[in-house]
Length: 347
Image (cartoon, rainbow, N blue to C red):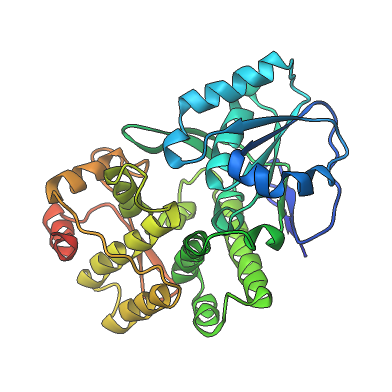
């Protein structure tokens, strides 16, 4: 299956997403594969057979705590050491962390070189690999340093998903639920009825998620409007990740917790009915991504919202579901209302 991501005329770079397409990769200029030890031990030999160029391999440490400027500098210095130039291409071969940091390095190396996404996790295939968001974390928060830099191609293979731990699969499904809830009630119904353990259902869900995201990105590449809706669950989830030092939950798991928090706020504001809220909870539970998280310090949790990229002029923009398949962006919710909704998640 090939999805043509035609971003013209709003974005200069359009590209194709190949889903389980047998296709050789050939680029002009030097080529570097950025990956980690886990992915390379499982899949690097498979990938080597599909690349026609000579290449170097740069391995980085695995884990959200290593998605930082130090790791980015390590990659950049390796590219310089091997005399890479503006005609060079980078391949991001791994999950969302590898994709984010490789794209970031591609955006800033010599003011921009091409890169290719080959995502090996479900979450990266349905979300992180599409749309050109790149970045690294700091001690103050997630993805606070980054750039918009579109790939030249994305290759998704279900072959990689067979080696994923169950938690990683669930993390990807959380991102599917995120985009379905705010943009497509029919997709929610599909997820409710389908069995994502079956390859046919999973491939359909991947293609649907990518198609929805591509449509949103074409309309709003730089997140000035509707693309911000893709952060449903993330404003809360990023704080959860930060408060647990990125070690207790996978990104998609934190998003699932964030979805529950956002839904509670939406319910209290009258945007979501009890039945609709329970419908999303049931979908999370069906896929074993209904996690329990307790806030230790409510005030500290609230203040961490202001480190989110969506805050501006000391206001927090919350992405909330409006029924199933709709959304609302709100930056005028009183603090006491937010805190009251969050009390359910306190110790």
